[in-house]
Structures are given as C-alpha cells and as structure tokens.
Length: 115
Image (tube, rainbow, N blue to C red):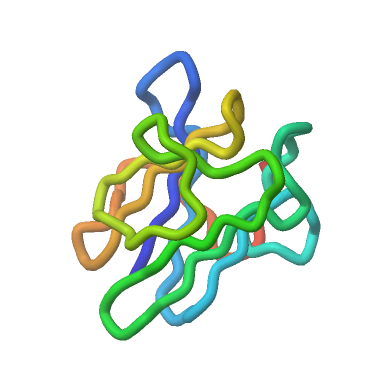
C-alpha cells in the first residue's frame, strides 16, 4: 500500500489523500490520464511516476519543472516513508507514506481524483 497526501502550502493540514493497494506504477501530473491529477500551472502534464520494485518504490521525475526532495532537485530516488516531494520549485507538496502505516487522517480518494 502507498498513500500520497497533498499537503497545504501554508498549513500542516492535508488537503487530499490517495491510497493505492495494487498498482505497480502511479502517475502524477496535470493530464487526465494520471492516477493523481493536480491542476497547477507549474505541474507538468506527466510530472512524475512512482514505480514499485519488489517491496520498495522509486520516484522517477518526468516534468520539465522538476521534482524536489529536501530542497534538492531529483531525477530518481527511492521512496522513504514520510518523505515530502515538491513539484516544481513553487508547486504543490506531496507527502508519501508506504506500507500499513499509511496516513489515515486525511480525506481520501481512491484512484483517479482531481485537485
């Protein structure tokens, strides 16, 4: 299981959450063919994908505006439970939770959802 939570930019409260149980690839971006759709001018149509490799997940950045973790632009990285990604330098933030300890206090949506 993996849960992606859209985090409010000015407050620590979650805006929306998506939980995936069986997917091996999760796509995030502005286009309607993504699993997580984010309407922001700085988010690319196909911004990033999360890909399962055994029990681990990898982030693969696809967007021209970049994906940032801990203030540094990344092209690929292994997912660490609780990490927060920023899409573009000033874009939305997504917190990632993996496994059974996935974040349960946020409003949830299954699969395709618009934000």
